[in-house]
Image 1 (cartoon, rainbow, N blue to C red):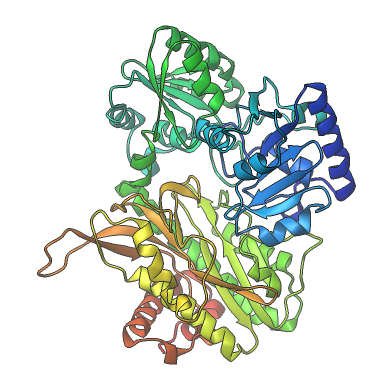
Image 2 (cartoon, rainbow, N blue to C red):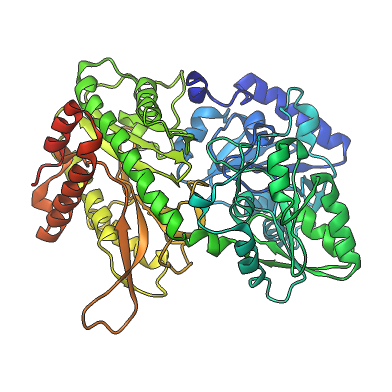
Length: 604
């Protein structure tokens, strides 16, 4: 079971495969009278984790990261990735075929505008692009005499002879004790967000699963069912889902409050809505351009906006918050058992990145509640730790010796989703490492201790985590924190702590707090806990104020901390946190781990 998790995507191309596949794609484009094609790493819902049948970018290029975009022209091609993958992409692709580019420096749209010839016809699959994405391309191509051509079928699908079928994972009802609110109550709440529209087309499976209190198994690591839904201002919602995913019991439960429809009927239903001149809301972030254009072509009025479930889903209710806290206690005990085991085993030189990750999942499984890991474990030693989203394979698997080991992992439990990163040193930490580690820790503590007024967004807090790195001329190229779902996606919007995090933070939201530092070719450091936004009462205060409750429980490696770089307040926070970890977890772990935990959480 475990071995497959550390293999590169099964249909990812080798160098020779990629050359043949690229040549075949170009031949097919020529046959269709096209001069290029857009290849996003996306499915029809813009999911982070996509079903195997949607891994077209990996099939074509060999790149297996969770975010990427390729543009193929007649004689050249480029692949675009963000800062997390600039190293990985070069390791996985053939640079003679695809030019790797940092998407923050060069956008696919601008590159296409610069490289497509006058009069070029560029094809795209309207099911895997949003309207906003296509509009960005169109704007960049203004005056270039380049035409974007929506295709009826994705040409890669015809070339991919062993393409997996569409997933039909079983759908289950999410128990009320974990959901905390009925589907009927949620539907009433969502209708308040229609803002005069006749209906909302829900294209985000996370929102659909939350709204209807269901969970599925169509993609790895996230318990969602791939589906669309139509929420009218009156009458029963429609859920467009493959009937093969529903047993009789689940079907009966859902039919009490909604109408079940096969996905193949969605186009016809939107066409009918368009003929009636209806206004339909579409999620700007996830709605396929195909659906928006179907309504518009039939005479309807599409309105691009936020999914009405996006914000309500992000603000967890009491049951969801209670579940998250309980899940983190169990998860913390498992992680602490792993860290104690690792501290004993790693110096003996017998561990590898894969065996360490296998052991961590074993500890999690032993608590009896694990449903899945919440993302592929980042088990990274030495230089691999400097790759923020490194994914170990049998080929890349390093033996762990003296040096830095980073493990970023998480779990899916019925009552909550976890995500935690710890960085530890095998052997003595160098002075440089201690300084870098402590600067990252100071940023982590700054977020954990932050107090801020109502209305503040994550973008306004992001610099808190970077200040001490900036003072040393250092930084990191990912956001400080992302939202986390309630037994849903480990990466949830709209809340986040980053330069782009414009959504105000509201009590009940769960976010990660994970500053880092990455020294290419040497080591990486990331320290991550999850936090809940909560109200804060400040004596004499004149504003409604918020702060964070830290819910992740696991020791930080004190051997990497340089107390001389910390303030008394920072040391006080760390000692208080470690005392809480020790008190909470000690009764839940074995005697050997308990002994290690006492030392690992000692006051400094």
